[in-house]
Image 1 (cartoon, rainbow, N blue to C red):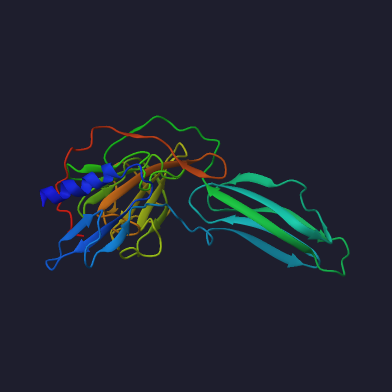
Image 2: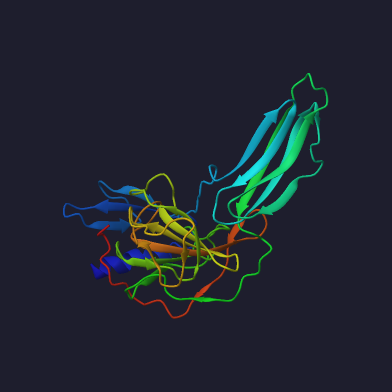
Length: 298
């Protein structure tokens, strides 16, 4: 088992320059999982990728009310975090009052703002326009405060299996400085920094529909956000809008979403201007050299 574990970890190192690397995963008659760079009978292609995808369409959205030739255009933010928004209009016909330049502003948490009041130039004809709406979590005006994170789990020691700039999945703007820590499913995951729970997902099984699996996102007081991914289904025990402190129980580790095996994907992000990016961070002590879990018990 230990030799096979070292081989699996070696695959991470040996293929680090190959981008999103595809290897082969097989399960024998005893349920033991193996990974190899060569196909065997019954093996399936396995791609190492972790991508952060959150769907906020039902929580940040346009509301347009129409009354007697006047369209009132509102933006509503139902999240427990500020959002930066940008609104512009194209394809204008019979419209007065549309801004000539895009409207960009930061909306407070749980707020609704009217951004435009459009009227018909000729009242007997309909207004014609196409709104273009973009948004991103967070306030880009804040400045990150230096902070060394305590481990966001209890137990261990556990091994770092993919670090910052890892070529499997830590190469995009949102995940460049993420860390993956291999640990058995059911390991307690705790808040590494205080803040407000912005968004959670708790219902995914296995790979599910979202690459991030089940997760918890926490907004820190300096505007940065910590995100805990691939959590066990049904284990998230905090709610959106709840304030947590260091050590608050969040969930149990799992193997959900686009996960290469049981692990915690932990990333710190901030809005730098209509876009979230990951930022460098450090734990306040070294991660253990070797894992104490059995690979294959997934």
